[in-house]
Length: 89
Image 1 (cartoon, rainbow, N blue to C red):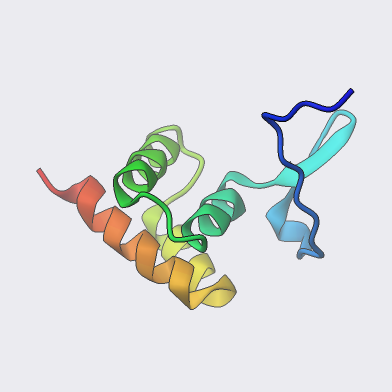
Image 2: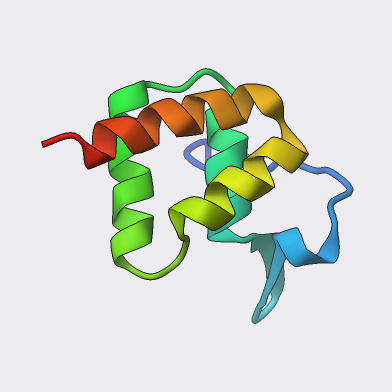
């Protein structure tokens, strides 16, 4: 059965970007945010996503910045903008 609300993406990734779950593998929250940022996202939504992940202890701004720079400079730019939005009063 195919669910049109779910989109599967395939790529060869470093093991550190993959989380093992019962019956499937998925990208880590850190990698997922970087992948979203690489596709020119809605910056307000990206800021909310990063803030939620940070508050949940899934990512840190330092790790997010560092990994994004290594994976995709464009994503790093959007993440930096989103971090500034999240930190703004």
